Amino acid sequence: MEWRLENTRFRITVQAMGAELSLLWDSERQRNWMWRPLPGVWNNSATQLFPVVGQLIHNGLWQGERFFPLAAHGFLRHQLFTCIEQDDTRLVVEACDTAETREMWPFSWRVRITWQLLPDGIDVTWSVHNPGGEPWGYSSGWHPGFALPITQEAGWAVQFAPACHGPFVTHQRTLSIPEHPLTVAEFPLLPDSFSHGAVYFSLVDNSHWAVCSPDGRPQIVFYGNQPWLALWGVPGADLLCVEPLNGTTDDPHFEGQITNKRGICWLSAGEHHDHRLSVGFPADSEQ
Image (cartoon, rainbow, N blue to C red; front, side):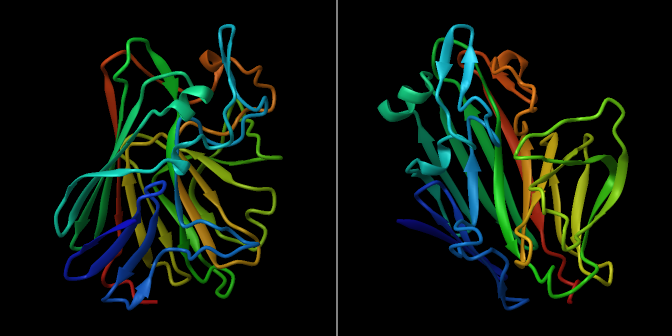
C-alpha cells in the first residue's frame, strides 16, 4: 500500500511499509529527486530510523541490568504505518509498538509522521510519543537518498550556514568526536568522501545546509531542528544520503549503557517530542 500527494509542482509517494518516501517527482525540473533502490548499491530510498541511529557495537543497549537486542537503525523502517489524515497535499501516518517490537524494546511508543507539500518542497514532522508509564531514551532520524550526478560532475559540495563542527569520519561504522573539533562551512563531495563510511557534522541551532552543484547553486536546501547530520554515499554511485539525526552511531569505546550513549533523547511518560525538517528545491537552480 502507498499514499500519494500532489500540488502544482511536486508529486510524492509514501509507502505504508516503513513510511518510506519512494518518489519525489518535480514537474518543473522533470525529474525524480529520490534514489531508486539498486541492489548492490543501496536497496532503499528514504528509511526511517528509531529508536536508535547507526551501528550498535554491542548489538543492542543496556538500561541498567536490562538488555535490548536492537539492530542498527532500529525497527521503525520495518513497521507498517496506517493513515490518520490525508488530503491532496498533506498526509499523516502513524506506527506504534507491537508484540514483536516489545520483544526487542519493551516500551509503549508511537511515531506519527506528517508530510506537507509546499510550493517549493516538503515539510516533514516526526512526533515521537511515550504513551506508557515509564520514561525511555531514544534516537531517531531520517535517511533519504537523493539521485544526484556527484560522480559524473566534479565540484558538488554541501554548504552550511552558519558553519558547523566537523567533518567527523566514521571508522567501521563507529564515530569518535575530538575534544576540539574543527569548524566547517563547506564539505566537498569527492570520489573518496565516503570511502570509510558516513561522515557526521554537529549542527548549531537554527542552521540550514544546501547541496550545491559545481557552479555553486543550491539544488536542495534543508532546514531542521536535529542536532546531527550524516552524509553518506557509495563510491562510484550517483547517490547522496543527507541524514538529519537525533543521535549518532556508537563511539568505539561505548560500554553499552543507554544513559551514556551520545545523542539520546529522553521522554517521560505521556510526553512527546517533535522533530522537523524542511526540504526545498530552488526553482532558479537549473543545472
